[in-house]
Amino acid sequence: MDFKRCFICSSSAKCRRISEGHEFRCDTCGVFVISSTLFDLFEEMSMSQDRGNYPLSLIRYLSAYIAENSSHDKPLVLTTDNWAAFAKSMKDETVDARTDKLLEFVEQRSDYPGHAVELLGARDYPYIRASRLEEFNYLIDYAMQGGYLSCKPGKFADIEVAGCYTATLTPKGIERLHPRTSHQGIPGRCFVAMSFHPSLSDAYELAIEPALKGCGLEARRVDKVPSNEDINDVILAELRDAEMVVADFTLQRNGVYFEAGFARALGREVFWTCREDDLRNLHFDTRQFSFIDWKDVDDLRMRLTNKVRALGRARK
Image (cartoon, rainbow, N blue to C red; front, side):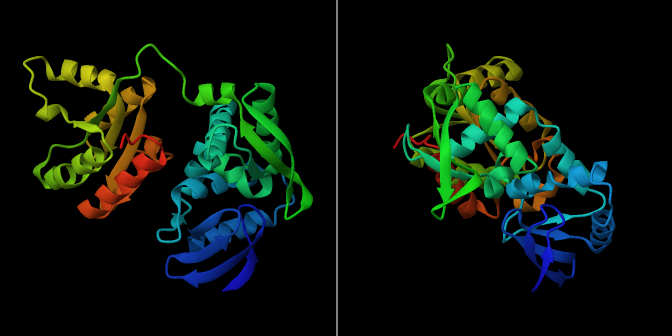
């Protein structure tokens, strides 16, 4: 591999030529691939003297998209057709949405309430959908002023570094992430939204249901709930009664999109899953979520179990 400046964050990155284009391995952005045509376009943009150029400012938001949608095993491929839409989906996030990502980022790294965790803005900014260190610092200030986060200047490798903090979620921050409502659903009940096609029977019976049961949760799929009521009324009632939802988008059923969206509006935790060969067909509006892109039923059962436990939703 050769060393080259990352087109997205300007850090030094490893780069090599592959069949799809150029593969980059960047400590800030992660692993991703740029098609040959886009590579040439980015090189042309990078030589522009107009640093206020709109495409150049938009490129910076790709770090956030890559952080959420790319991995060493399955690197994201950026092309002339998709890069701008990917970046814009991050750029269009509101300040409040980015603040929630910041609070979630701190919570995920905390072992217990009150645990102080290290944040290094130059490394961590993509994970809160920011475009650069300055935006990361702005969101830290916003969260502190709102009383959601307590921060002190930190050190990296025993050296004081700009944008380095020791951060702790405040009780108000925890409440923002997990607001109390009059009805949070029946404890332990999990609604399963998915296609009822026979090809996915094993996905439910051998993966989703046993994974939930193994975590002490009750799986509820509407076709298995006895009722003489209108099916739509049953679905809405089941969603209101559920503490959380598993939404599997394999075969792209419209109902699953509706049920996942309704669950989010209710403030329910949604576990997003899709068989990997159908992942590319997901509607663009859902691609910012962290999907379990399962290969087979064993993979789905294991990864769903791990996800439920990692988010503290298991009851045994």
